[in-house]
Length: 387
Image (cartoon, rainbow, N blue to C red):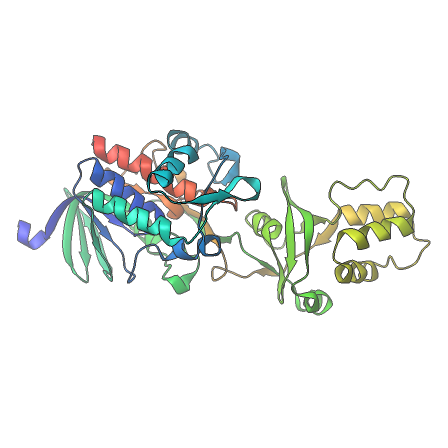
């Protein structure tokens, strides 16, 4: 096949202009590689713009391996250790982006998430990365190099980086393209699932609780060994809020979620009346009254031990989740066993890399998924520069 038949040649082609793809393209370009960044949407970074309520929770001050889920819990350690939140914050400061810390170490832009997108665009320009928008990939093949056929032509490269994200928020253009591509190259894909997603009730539970939509309070949510103490929100279909989004990544049907409605409270020495009063004063009164009635604790002579046990362990069995349409991220993805943890390169397909959300690494709520995007992109770009 002639060069003309193959199309334009690059050192690296990156598929997906989201957080991970843009950062990898920028770094690889700045390290001397000729980079083509391909995006099927009409603009880059759509998910960045809506993240953090439009202010982009771009990382967390403290990031540890235990903040991530994966079939291989050790996989993310190398990349996270070699590109830290402090490294990304230094870049943010260099671009003079004002930011602040919210609870639990979460870092947000003072103004708009557009500042982070503009920073990534500027970094890509600094590296000479070429961006093609509205460019749909129709075929990917590999001989001595990768051939990517698209709606805007054919392109070849020695290395191909897949940063196409997961299935979350399809209205922004999310697809399973990255998983399909991985399977075509013989890679294992851990079953994708909605993560950081609201939970839904059965019709019976919905009738009992969902007229309280909008009511919120602090709880401790537990599923298996995972536990999160944050706010819970009742919705028109079930439960949401940070505590529920966090625990949803661990929940699988038909399992239960255990809620401590008075986390940290010691009712020793209390009476049923004072215990009920503690609940009414701690949680929104409408919810507390409904809960006492539903659980049968309106009679004054019921034993305190039973009330206390139920307050600290209210068992909720969700009917399901709100699905990928409302999920902040996608769990599962390209198996970590297929990739080199230092480089993100496929062990059995030289030159093929997977980074970001498409990989089976899913962070907790609070900037962790962005940090994985930056760290995995950095790992791949470093390897590409050394190749």
